[in-house]
Amino acid sequence: MAALPPHTGINFTSTIHKDINLSTDPNKSDLSQPSKVILITGAGRGIGRSVALQYAAAGVATVIICARTATELDEVEQAIHSINSSVKVRKLPLDISNEEDVATAARKIKTEEGRLDVLVNNAGASDDWTPIGEGDVKQYWNTWTVNFKGTYLMLHGFLPLLVETAKEKNTLVDVVNVTSIGAHVITPGASAYQTSKFAMLRLTEFVQAEYGDKGVNCVAVNPGGVLTRMSAEVDAIRPMLTDTPDMCGGFIVWFTKGQRSWLSGRYLSATWDVDELEAKRSEIVQGEKLKMRMVV
Ligand SMILES: NC(=O)c1ccc[n+]([C@@H]2O[C@H](COP(=O)([O-])OP(=O)(O)OC[C@H]3O[C@@H](n4cnc5c(N)ncnc54)[C@H](OP(=O)(O)O)[C@@H]3O)[C@@H](O)[C@H]2O)c1
View 1 (cartoon, protein in one colour):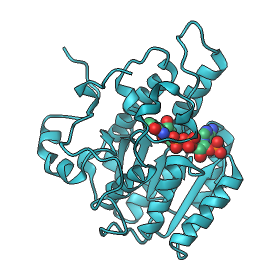
View 2 (tube, protein in one colour; view 1 turned 90 degrees about the horizontal axis):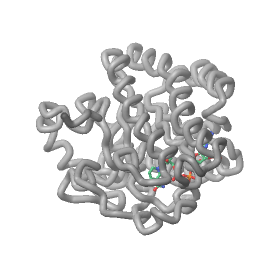
View 3 (cartoon, helix red, strand yellow; view 1 turned 180 degrees about the vertical axis):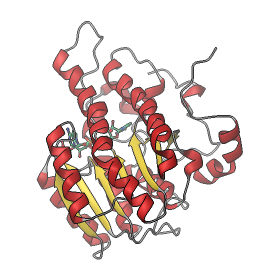
């Protein structure tokens, strides 16, 4: 695969990380968020699992872990408790692309938890990378169904509770949509995956436009290149899978620790140095950076 061009933000900060670091590691920095309820989709393995474990280290009140494979959720529950036994874990087996599953889950969390502070839309899927005219229609559409419809359904189901939490607790709440640096490039064969991740960037801007004034911060985060079950299937990106899953876990915990509404609606990368990112605040806000716009 060719080197990634600058517009992908590949070098947006001068330090580019490959692992969790001092400012994003809840074991080294104060990233505690004691009263929060966190919901993470795709938390059974890979990146979502690491996000859950970093929130455990940050000492949140409750972590709700979602995926379809119940046995993987059992393992993550144990791993969370071995890090922090006082974190409440709620396992929620569901298919994010199933309207009824998501609606039932949203009702259950509203009734039984009564609040939601952070929604991490991490679950995703990829197909075999094949040119448009040659691939399997069902596989192509499954990628869109999980990545876009699934994210939309989670937003549809949980935004009311997020808004209610922001209002009742007089705070900001956060939504993190896990996208990909692939959203910014056109890799022949990858149109299902890359268009779905590109569309998630605009969906993120819509959440900001519709819910920003109701206390909801929404960003899209590229987790870096991480060797996981999904990414291991794509031979073309194998050499790029050199980041740890904890890097993204720590980055998301860092993001939600602050009240970072100035980043809302934007694309972020977990590879970026967060202290440099903070230092670029006025450049980003005044320059309307990290949003998708046509060059004219
Ligand atoms: N790995 C990378 O280098 C990389 C790079 C850029 C972006 N990403 C993004 O990072 C996210 C996590 O991927 P990963 O690499 O960690 O992959 P992974 O290890 O295969 O994990 C994917 C997770 O999503 C869940 N999932 C898939 N379909 C689902 C559905 N319909 N309903 C509910 N849960 C579902 C899976 O659980 P079940 O199968 O049990 O449901 C699993 O827990 C994805 O959005 C991916 O696009 C990854």
